[in-house]
Length: 126
Image (cartoon, rainbow, N blue to C red):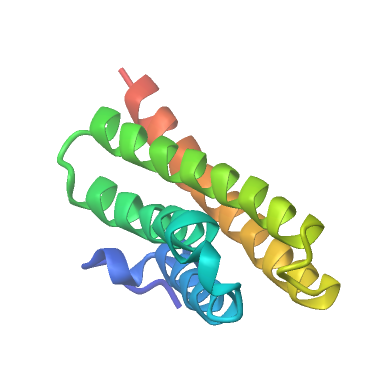
């Protein structure tokens, strides 16, 4: 079934990104209190930035602008992946939780890359 996409919330990339954001919030609740204004805040901002930039890109009228915001979203996702590695390595995230969230982040990355590829192909059209 091919439903028409009317809102950014209809995008699979946004939906799966939102799942990632919620997972990040759940996981970071267990971080040490002294990290509240450090790693906890940084990780949460990165995660929210992923879906925020997908939403903003969706609302843009030109494919070039869409590409810019989808690319920023991918950058935020990559930054998040780095911060999750740090969190795992300092012992804030269990290996099981890390694997689960890393898998979700990889899935979201593939979906964002699809948005980027679509935007690039639209820009390249004569």
